[in-house]
Length: 311
Image 1: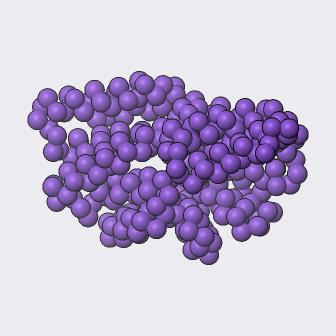
Image 2: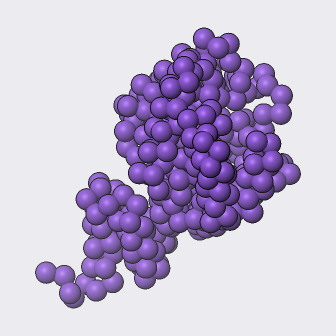
């Protein structure tokens, strides 16, 4: 499978979403023709397909592929394996992303237990569980548990070699938690260190955009709206390059609209908010709370553009 993953990595670096999907599906088709649909190899490739779908916000297809991969591992008596735990944490990440933080915490804790039983505390997967668990706790508003998990991840990463990606992720998570806790100084220190790690990487990283958005939010909170806008636009470009117009892209569009409004650019804010709303409706549905909030914000902006039309 080395050749498969080498080509997959190259396609991700190129940001060619259509080619990524075609490459994964083609390999699955080859395995299917060989009668290997219940094999560990097939489940591993399904995990890659599910992760791709999650990245481009095709959430239903992602969940189906993750669950099918888990079923195959269970059929092969690997429900306490590292492979099973890896898919489980990926599914939990999808659940967190779709607003099921409580369920995600349960899955992350199960994955963590399996990895510990396999003595994988120094592995990337274990660090990933800790980082994602921190974000799930953050979504639930449990800042103490979120910070503890993020610090644990940071400690593990600091003791590892070749851990630039994991280090940057841990620092970005710490910044997000400190931001929500109102600890601006620690959030700024963490995000600036994360950005320095990303900037030093020889190749662009798919998660760089998240750090840029965090920096933008800190600048916005500090009243530096124009500087924040520049970082939001850079994050938007990197998100679209790697994932297309996914949910993170929509959120960044929303943040840009709010920043434009704060800068007095009502027309720019209105147009961008409309774009964000269209994406939220497409990705989350018209009745989702985030969609509804965006719709109300757009109405308010339109009212400011046309004050005489309000009733």
